[in-house]
Amino acid sequence: MNRYATDGRDLRAELTPYLHPDEALLWTGQPYTTRKFRPNPLVVVFMIFWFGFAVFWTVMAAAAGGFFAVFGIPFLLIGGYMLYHLFVGQKKQLASAVYAVTDRRAIILCADRRGTGCTEFLFSRLSNITMDEVDGTTGTIRFLPDQPYYTGYDSPRYRRGRSPDYDLRTAFLAIDRVQEVYRLISEQMGRA
Image 1 (tube, rainbow, N blue to C red):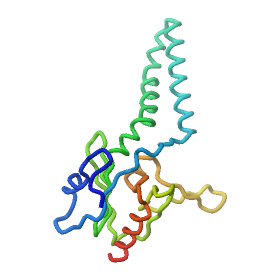
Image 2 (cartoon, rainbow, N blue to C red):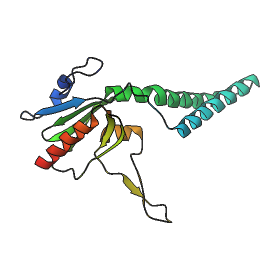
Image 3 (cartoon, rainbow, N blue to C red):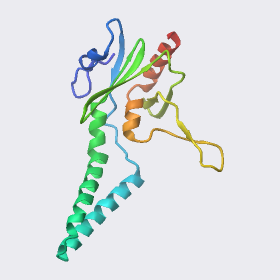
Image 4 (spheres, rainbow, N blue to C red):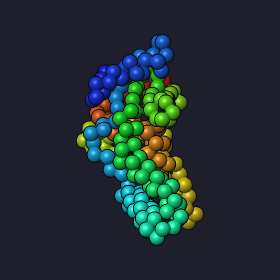
């Protein structure tokens, strides 16, 4: 079991308050944050367009000497926040996440502005898990099935979580030695 994260944090100490007295900790880990983070290109284009137009609007309105430049400030702030969250904020969230596998459950700790949230998946209640996005030994283990949605014209299609924040709380994202962790979870599900 890996005890320390790549940045030297003691993961076992962080997880101890969330463990039951007789629960055995089998594995701890974090997302592989040195892997290149690739946001959706369409989202990037939209956010750059939004921010660029807000800058253009504010500058042109200020140059015209009108009061309309004030209306551009909230759009500048929103665009700046969206770009920051996409490139910096999501990487910080990934770095704060801690994953654990015990003899009874999978635990996901995730810190945000409001504090640390804990999500658990009891092995006795899980019906299946999926392993995907495997690149060598790095990959993702998802605990919830893809959500069906209907287009109205044909058979159902499936999509994953609604946002990266949703996926961060429902999956072990981009972990090292994903095959070993997947096998460990499968064994614990078989015993439950």
